[in-house]
Image 1 (tube, helix red, strand yellow):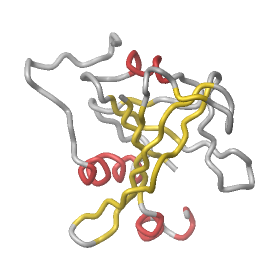
Image 2 (spheres, one colour):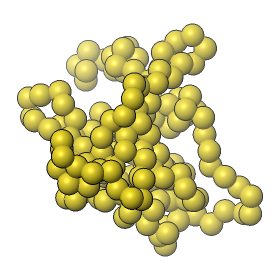
Image 3 (cartoon, helix red, strand yellow):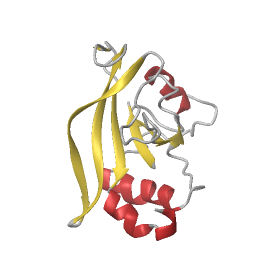
Image 4 (cartoon, helix red, strand yellow):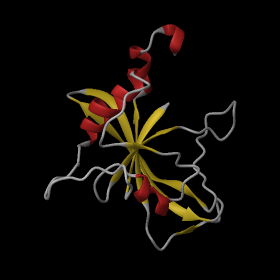
Length: 157
């Protein structure tokens, strides 16, 4: 399942006029970007890049960003820890992204449309990793599973 990560210069990076910022709300990220990416595999936007968060260290991500300064936004595909399991793999070569706190529900009007999780980067291997001095934080957004099941035909669920 595609997800959006907000992590926080490349030749492909867009030059913006002074004062311009790309700072969508949580609801806008879900409805205008993630949902469209989920519906159209080839959907792309000038504002959000694509990254493999398991093959990239956090300090490499700014160079992969399409635009702007901190925070940066990326689409990424969920990587499962085990082929037959449901646990998400969040490890990189030098560390891992650890979930902190409780996920935040994202609503549009009164309907639940997605979730936002906060992750912090730790060096080393779980559970003995240590929080990095750089304080890398990622906000991971995903569609609500009930919403994605309503959208997809039964053959694609």
